[in-house]
Amino acid sequence: LRHHHFAFHLCILKDDARPDPARAGRQARFEALGVKIHYATASPGKMESVAEVARWLDAEGIDILHTHSYRPNVYARLAGALCRPNGLRIVAHYHNQYDDKWDSEPAMLLLETQLARSTDAMIAVSESVRSHVAERIGVAVDRFDVVRNGVDTAQFQGIDRVEARRALGLGEDRTLAGLIGRVCEQKGQEDFVEAAIALSEDHPGVEFLMAGDIEDR
Image 1 (tube, rainbow, N blue to C red):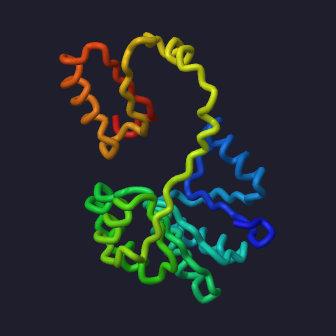
Image 2 (cartoon, rainbow, N blue to C red):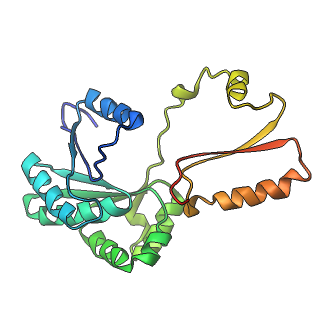
């Protein structure tokens, strides 16, 4: 969006005091773009965060609220609903399929269904996410726009393939199969391991790698 027409604010529902170089780097990128950042003090996933976000929306005079993913889509939109009389417009962004969460927290699915009625625009990161979420919350598929995740490919240019393999202790002539993502049931690392076992007998030259933070031990 054009900066001379818009002022950008970012509210983060999960505050973490632990030092995190990656997070600090992301914050610096936002600040360099002139984005004003607010870390919520209420515990994420709690109704107190709804009140805090509502106060933040009102204090900053936010005109468009763009929420992202599972809990922010519910709690921030509940806060937004309190500010609708001020003309606030709401955009909900879906990054995933949430069956595992909705099946264990049916109240959240009910809130999603109700909040869809007061949401001005809905975005999905893929066609499959769009059709899945539309079916689960009972809205027409054409209410969603698909905007795929952007990737800055320049940051992956110029990498020395041989040196990268050497740093990981891998042979130059090995075929590598990799899975990158947080380690959790949803990402299906167990399927990757089963595939590795099945393939390794007939393809002993293949090596299998996984990378990601451990969420489900």
